[in-house]
Every structure is written in structure tokens, then in C-alpha cells.
Length: 444
Ligand code: SF4
Image 1: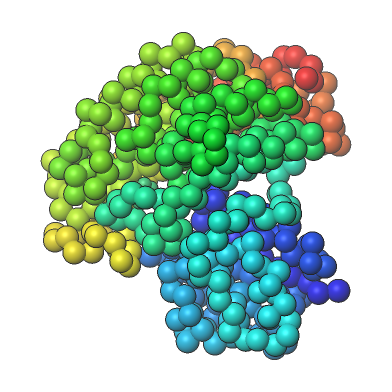
Image 2 (image 1 turned 30 degrees about the vertical axis):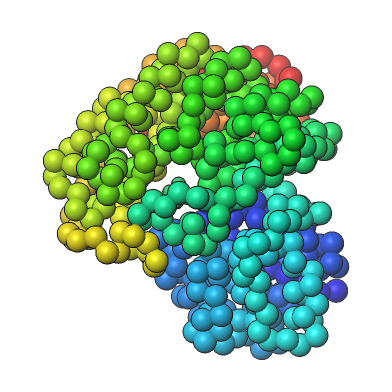
């Protein structure tokens, strides 16, 4: 039997791509192993969103080289798409280079590799079947990803995604709803809709659903109890999405809305297509909703030309919104992007200083917001048990981690009983990054 090993870096889109690749390999008679040293085929699904992530790829490929005899190596994902056949020059032990739009052709590429071809590429963007691999081996037994839109038609000045994942292609609502129904029948209760810009979704079929209508339809699939989505672009985020969340408790009350900067001048240099005031209008829609909607965001500090005044505006935005969580990054130069041509690149130490101020400011907000939840009862999906802390690990609809004790299931051997169930948990303590509590009701 042929064996394979796969390593994945990057976003949820990449994680889900790897699930499709694994399903495809299993269907071709391969079996998965946990150590790359014991595999015949080693695949590395890569991320190129930041310079550091890309450097890691070549470092890891060098490590693989020391035991390359008789093995076949493949590079998948964004670095594969970005660097293409150049990877063969830099890492001659690599035999396969394939971007995400080509994974449906993996069986044919495997045949070429098995017949001894040592330079196989899959770098086309025109694969209309990009989403529809017949086999997907999902890693999580309760939460399933569904890709609804691939690629991106925006041109944010710092972002490499339009070059690595190509133009936007939406999937038909019928195939999305069929997949959601199938997943519910298999026992999944949480669906996460994925795309670089989910709210740019345009159903290519006659049904013609926009994103808000698709969201409602997925929320009505029998057996699905939670629907999440990521990521949204502020320009395409409409009030109707908030209305849909308000109407249907099965739609999780959490929205990730990347802002990147609080300064209009920097937003314009970033080519983000919205102003701070327009972004804040969307925040107001969510703050006025009947259900409390948790809001998270992405922040980039040190974009070329970002002055202290611009940076202060980002800090004032953090105070104005009071996000539930943030992902903060230092600007990183990426190939092909418009920001490379901008002047006034910020020194690394200054970027680091700004990023630590952002995290410090946000930490204070999270401590305050989490403390307000002490005493509240949250519906919690049990994800597992932490032996070290003796607590169950759960996630709330607002996407908060809620670790808790259960008086009737204090021991780990109960894991199979509780994992995947929904419990009412009372919050008893709070920290900056998570909550702690005690289950108050039985398994549902
Ligand atoms: S919207 Fe901007 S940041 Fe998001 S994937 Fe597209 S280009 Fe990149």
C-alpha cells in the first residue's frame, strides 16, 4: 500500500483544501501516516500571506531533503501557485507543484508521478470543478467547512491572494445546500462557510441567491445547529446579513469583519474600498441587532506611510468598536502587490512596537468584555476534554472558548459521551482569551 503524509499551513481555506486532498488520496488507495519519514508521498500545503510563512516553506523543504531517497515530494497551495515551476529549481527533490484550483485533478497528477514523471505541475485557474472533489476527509467530527466562493476580485495593496487563488468563482447554491444536507445526515451539526470574501457570493445558478439568502437557507437545513462564515469584506457587508443573524438562532452571532486600519488615509493607500465612517456604519448595524453579535477583526500595523497619527486612529478605532477579539499583523512585503511601489516603508522595530501596543490595548478591552459575561448562561458545543486542566473545552455561538466542569461527567472517559453535544454552561470566571464555567443542564 502507498502511504502519504501531509502538512498544512495557513488559513481555514488551506485546512479545508487539505481535507479534500486527503479524501482524494484515500480514494486512490493511499493510506495516511503521521511521520513524514515513513511516507512514500509527502505533501506540503503552503501559505504565502506573509514573508515569514513563505520562508518557512523552503526551510521545511530543506529539512525533508535529508531523507529524500525513494520519496516523492509535492508542494501545494499559495506558495506553489506563486512560485510555480521555480520551486523545482530551488528544491530539486520536489516533483509536484500544484495550486488550489487544480486539486480536483490530483488523481491524474498522481498517475503521472507514479509513472515516474518528476516535474508535474497543476497551476491553472480555470478549473471550474475546483470545489467539487468527490471525496473530502474532514478532520473535525462535529464542524465541517464548506467552500462557497474561491478567489478574490479585490486588489488590496498588500495582499497576494488574488495572485495565488485567482479571480472569484462562486459555487451554485444547490450544491452548497446538498453538501450541507449530506453533512447533517453524517452527524455534523456545525457548518462553516468559507471564502476569501463570502459576502461577495453570487449564486451562478437560476436561483440567484446572494450571501444573506444563502446564509438563511443553510441555517434552515435540518440537523444543522450552527452556521458560521468567514471572511467578510466590509464593502460588501450589508444590513441583510445582520437581519438574517437576528432572525435565525442557528446562525452564529459572530462576525469577523477585517478593518486593517482606522485611518482613512491608510485605508485608501491599502485600496480597501471603504472609509472608517462606512466601516463604523456596519459596526452600528451589528451593535443595534437584537442578538448580541460578537465582532472580531484583522489589523495591519506599519503599512507603508503609516504615521504615528494614522496609528493613533487605529487605536481609537479599537476603543470605539470594542472588538471581542482581533488578529494583529505587521505589514509584510509580498511579491506582485501594489504596496511594493509605495514609499516610506516602516522599520521592523517600529512595526513591532506598534503591534505590541495594539495587543496591549485590545487585551484590556477583552478583559473588560469577558468579565461582563460572568453569570451568563451560554449554549456551548463541547469540543473535547483537557486532561491537564481537568476541564471540558467548549465553544459558544459567539466563538468564545468556554472551558467548564460538568458535575455528572468529571472524568475523561466520558469524552465520547460529551464531545459534540450542546450544553448550557454558566460562566463563573473570565480571562482575556477565554471563559470558565460549570455545566448546568444535561446533554442535548
Ligand atoms: S479582499 Fe483584499 S485582503 Fe481579502 S483576499 Fe481580496 S485582496 Fe486579499
